[in-house]
Amino acid sequence: MDRKNRIAVVGAGLGGLTAAGFLQRAGFTVKVYEQAPAFSRIGAGIILSANVTKVLRRLGLEEGLIAAGIRSQSYVSRAWNTGEIMAEFVFDAASEARYGGPYVHIHRGDLHGVLERGVAPGTIAFDYQLVDLQEIHGSMRLIFANGAVNEADIVIGADGIRSKVRDYLLGPEPPQFVGAVAYRAIFPAGRLKGFKIPDCTKWWGDDRHCLPYYLTGRRDEVYAIGVVPAASWEHGDTSIPSSREQYLESFAGFHTDLQRVLEAVEAVTLWPIFDRKRNDCWSGGRGGSGGRVALLGDACHPMRPFMAAGGAMAVEDAAILSRCLADFDDFGDAFGCYEATRIPRVADVQRISVENSWMHGPTETDWFYCYDACTVPLGKP
Ligand SMILES: Cc1cc2nc3c(=O)[nH]c(=O)nc-3n(C[C@H](O)[C@H](O)[C@H](O)COP(=O)(O)OP(=O)(O)OC[C@H]3O[C@@H](n4cnc5c(N)ncnc54)[C@H](O)[C@@H]3O)c2cc1C
Image (cartoon, rainbow, N blue to C red; front, side, top):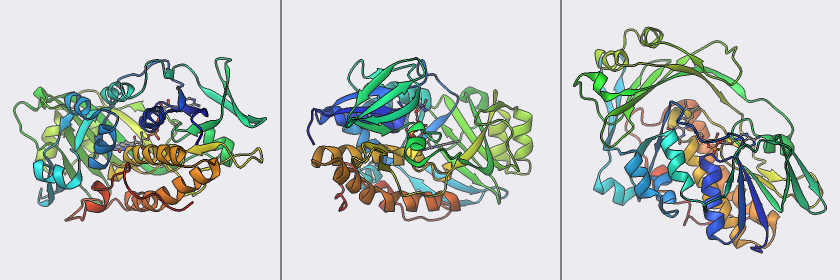
């Protein structure tokens, strides 16, 4: 595609910044518009498996990820009551050679700091909340809450689960509450008072689970996310404060090894979990010109976080969409190729996320971790 095309990416999340980094390297002029006034260090961690870290390596970010987070050595699945080890996955030099990258856990705020280094200085416009999109005379007009109006030839909606760009493409439709909420707590590992935990453990109950893992290579910061059923959620899409007592109560009866971790918790917040039903329309337009808009990540396929893969899908989408835009002359062909390449894989990941079956027992992981979005053959548009 003609590198003179100006590309607007809406949303400076995992997917938006990855797309911007690749598109700039391909020679496009790219601007990222982010609604937040700045990146903040929200209280949550994220797991980045090898299929993500190998992609971010191409943006020169792998060392930064490992320095800011932890190169994890193991993932253990344990039964909620007996503590029986149901499955164990070791991450070492051999697994890195097999999968093509390390398995990293990192604080989300630190991740943003690393991702920002993958784009040219000045790429991100903060405090730019997209409120409307229009297609006018063969280009896209972006209208922002701060009064600014900008133009671009292509718009990439990387604006998350409540995407405005998705609204433009498919019409407004709120995401669905999945009937579960997540406790999220980060605390200094010193509060474990010497109690040693593996780098990551998933404690499996019948209708709930808890995942404590380290966030730093020094193993001095722990993140514990616990997912429990909830009949409803009355607080929109915002989190609410919770407490250690409430967290412990939700996991009462779980093995003492988990109780010891939750007793160390300080501040806790409770988050609703939303997703959307599968929808395979990720690109198009309204103006009759074939469409200049594409979605990626949570904007088109938000999923339950039970496989720890939503962010991974956003990064893979970003790499593939960038390859398609660079390879094809026509927008429609580029978007068609992107959808053909991505939809089957994302559908599998979405299904497994709903089942909450990933790594419950011995699991064939190669198809997921070995995937390389920078080299995988592209689908036929
Ligand atoms: C509890 C929980 C745990 C999870 N754990 C993991 C995990 O371990 N591993 C993993 O891979 N995934 C995990 N995920 C999923 C992952 O967080 C998401 O899939 C991922 O963040 C999606 O990335 P994205 O770039 O598509 O969107 P986002 O990360 O949501 O980024 C969207 C960006 O767009 C901005 N934006 C929104 N609207 C506008 C607008 N109108 N104008 C301008 N900017 C806008 C937002 O401020 C934000 O910066 C988890 C999710 C949850 C809820």
